[in-house]
Image 1 (cartoon, one colour):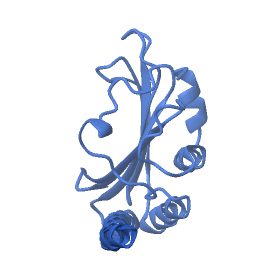
Image 2 (spheres, rainbow, N blue to C red):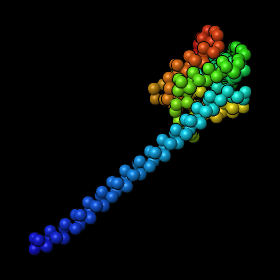
Image 3 (cartoon, helix red, strand yellow):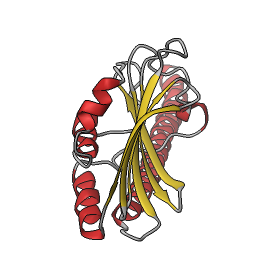
Image 4 (cartoon, rainbow, N blue to C red):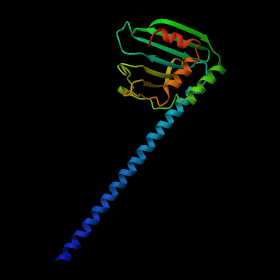
Length: 201
């Protein structure tokens, strides 16, 4: 009788073990395939953004937009630095309707622009994955700090945009040093730090 029970239990146990191993293998395979496809998509997006950044065509530009704390309209401040192969422009604003406070507009040339975008590339400007939908909506983000958005433009249209903030809970999509990138942009405009300081961001 005991031998009969053992002979019935053994095949059932063996089948259960085989099923468990098969399920575990299937889960592992699914994870590998999913991670590979995700990392491939990330790499291809980064490569495309990097190519766009390093393009020195006349219709290309890079822009940094910095938004201050979310406060009353009269106290809200922001600024923008846009660099193209032929120009460098810093504009400071007050209010949510972007009333211009000050502006510095300077010329530029292709070799200068090329050095600049390569320095941005080495500072990992394109490192990160551009968010979509609500995750890419910066409205209301980091109400007590600053939001930094870095945009690569072609014919004045965005072909890549990453952002981050000074608030710990709102890292955003940029995976690079915002201090380093901000310093590189400001160094393109002599006197930029003095102009930005005036608006008390």
